[in-house]
Length: 117
Image (tube, rainbow, N blue to C red; front, side, top):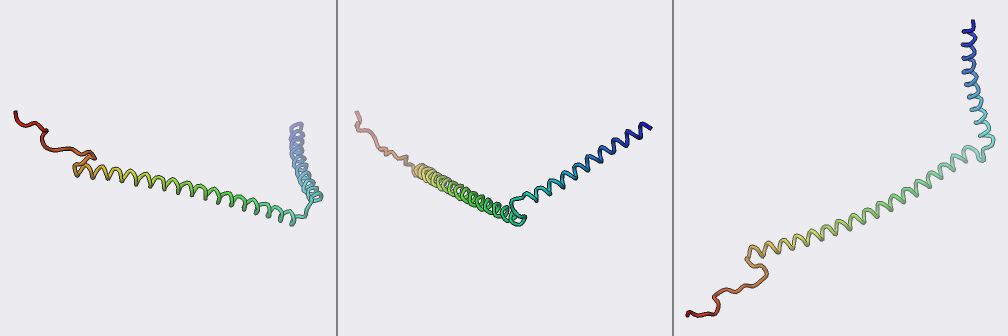
């Protein structure tokens, strides 16, 4: 008999907790609507405008960052292309001087000025 009483008491506690939770939720929602500074449509409009403004600012910041990054990459590509062209021209001039036999210094041919003894 004591077992049934304990079981009933435990079930009652769970039910009262849920009823209190439900009552608190309804009471909180009612008080929130009662003391809200703006109507629902005004509040939704304000939230929409705020989100729209933040989205616009975020888009502008992203566009600016993208443009800066794009400019820097273009500058780096131009520098790389210039360095490649300089290296290619210097290697090309070295290769052409090696095939013609000139190394940039002039040599003399013939004998040195002593006649037979």
